[in-house]
Length: 115
Image (cartoon, rainbow, N blue to C red):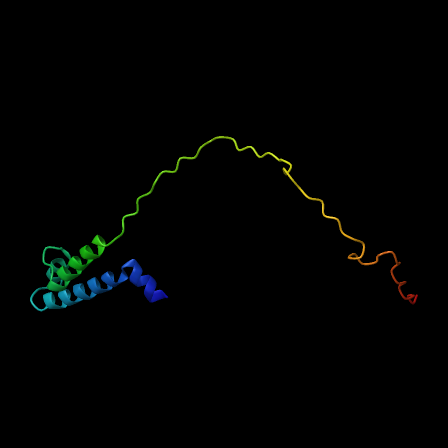
């Protein structure tokens, strides 16, 4: 899940750029002092082939981003009236006493409780 989240957020480009800068710094240390190597590596005027490839890939990835167009919703401010109406036609359904259970008997008496 973490790898998918990092991939979706573009963390791979930061990781690749760190590798490119480290490689450039090591290569520049072979021919220059530490101060000059750091300046040459991070000034942006001397990109290596890996830095150029990362920049091109980032640019190509940004072209594929979907454009979201937000639309404005117009809400009508008319009051809503709810009116109860009786139905136009209804039918009274009668049940015969044969269908209903006999409820004329009393419930059973509960057992006496011990005091």
